[in-house]
Image (cartoon, rainbow, N blue to C red; front, side, top):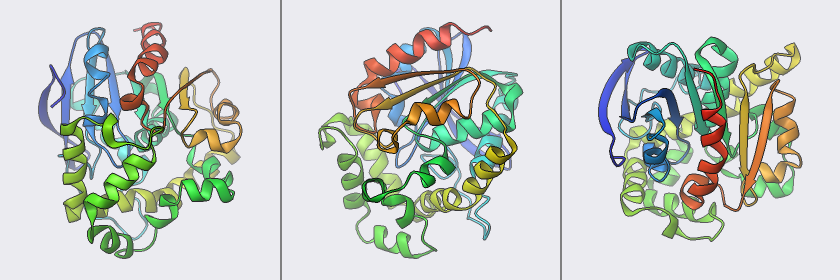
Length: 297
């Protein structure tokens, strides 16, 4: 649980999502990434809830949400389908529009939602990613070493599932630790770390996490490439935060990549590894509180 939040299960798009909610005000949806779940927002969500109605779902396949089996086209865990989950969640909660803030895979769901359902998003926040197609195009030796999981997890089932399943906690601990600036698990609260480890031990969720990356290497990449060729743009105001020790910093000009996709982009950087909400929550709040407070409601 996030301090001060309540949990419920909400039916949407043919499945159920586990949803944590707290606060009052304009709705703000927080979307987590891999290999995490709603716990990654524990340091910032209570402060955000002083100003907003904060809604924190576990994405399909993560946390306590349903984890359907993948399909051959990898559409089940595409960011288009996950975005439909969030639109359905908004409908279930009787919300016409919301601010959306996403980290890692949740950021990919967020910007896909902004492209596919622009009428649903007031302002869009992105933490520690660049668009999927652009990230693949930016690969060189350094980025390939740092982001090896993009190709490893996308391998056909059940190869990565079997390899990770041999020592799931060891793999998750290695991943979390190696993506922090301090190369340490100490930035993760005990409850969060226990939750991340637990979902890695669940074969259905392990499969879902791999399917998420299989979609990223195929379905999601193709969507991005088609949208880029068509000149489609994100119309919502966008705030992009990236860390000096994270993945986007390895792409050369991450802010420039987003400016090619959105009409109105603000950017900020912070001292952190990939997990900015846990490593440097103050920087996250400094970037996004004024950004979302400045939006019309």
